Length: 405
Image 1 (cartoon, one colour):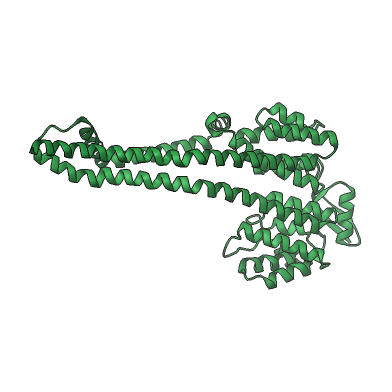
Image 2 (cartoon, one colour; image 1 turned 90 degrees about the vertical axis):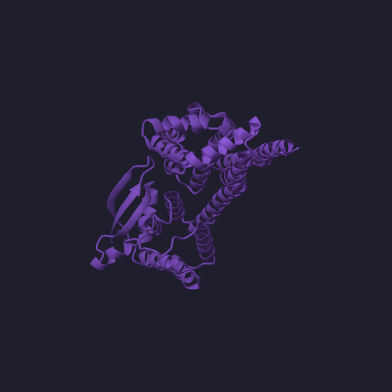
């Protein structure tokens, strides 16, 4: 039988062609011998109706990260138990209580039975499975260890989701606290103070300076607060446009990356995602240049992304990863040293993941220390502002009492 294929070579370039093989498995083995990572392998003479099987289906709801983790680990367990891929997908779909997972498993099962590779079937659902997920699944499929590859992939996705959720959870309380206190200040200035203003006006006395300042601030917020809010919103819009600008945006990203007040958190968190993806792909047998190419999608800071792209291009020329990362001068030095040890000991994939773990621990420690100062700091500062407002009103009331006596 003749199979058409699309595959990626060791340099990350897309190759297309056809080959003779007695089965799809034999075709996959031949591509592996040619050091090609398949994107799609299918029979040349497919019936016309089969073309529709490769199209992505639309789900009524987007699956959560936890759904994807459960699906990945469940599929790995069934494959380890000895089930073939299409049968494992059928079992997962029939036992799930989520309609989205049932449709997804059904569609993947149909594509696998029609001759598509598992990686090609996943590629038809890019809204659900990111590029690195598809590549890691393909690598395990080529190496004949799809179950082990999916098990590592599920653990990778679960850990990444856990880190993101932990960071978000750490920031929720101080943000809510600041918002509530700010709302309290606005209510005091716009609702409470005007009631005292009429009282002070009737007395026709000269009010103390703190009271006059606070009453004037209340009038300003009440009369011009919406203008200030509009200016703030406009500033946010202009800043967002500047960030999207292809010339100015990368400069802003670089300044943000090197700013002292970010405490290196951007470099640590994004480098961690980049290194963990490269390490996991390398452990699954993906060549280093291709692994770094896939991991580029994990970077959102354009200064880091530009440096990582340069690393990717130079890796194809045979340079060492640690030297390239060190030369870029934007990646954490401690992680670069661990990677150098990995290259020297032949344990690069393991040390890449250890470096990512170390960066995650450092980032979480930094966040914990900042929150230990930020939360009481916000409470003290905002409490002092509220107390100053109340004190200024009390001073004015006391001046009324003095007038009465």
